[in-house]
Image 1: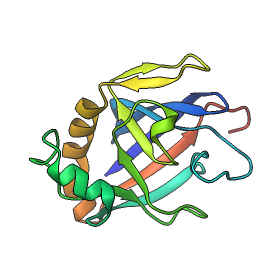
Image 2: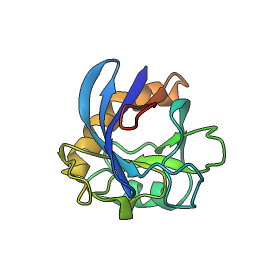
Image 3: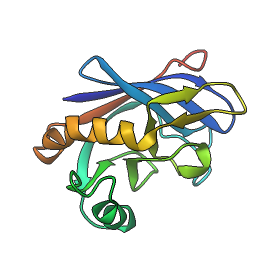
Length: 154
């Protein structure tokens, strides 16, 4: 199973994308902005394909296991693995670049206006995406591809 993150608009702080599963649109995504040189907590991950595992330790895992919005479906965090120079990159809820440190946030609504980029209804989108892919992640059969359509030359 494959998640595709089609990055289509960015500014220095934020990137918005269309997120699909096996070619079917599911929600929007938001990440940090592109930087040629990594700045810790402020740079999106490089375009490419990565395996997604399930992380069953850490702060996010504990919070989501107790959170009334997610505890009925939570089986661990979707953890993007083996990204050069990045660690602990997750898919989770949030609305602006201030809520991510390289992670992918998801939402059902998007504001793609440079300087004001954000997503909305993040918990709704997260539940939908998570429910679609968690079985594949646990089976070791989930990967994610990031495509840079927001920058000239990719």
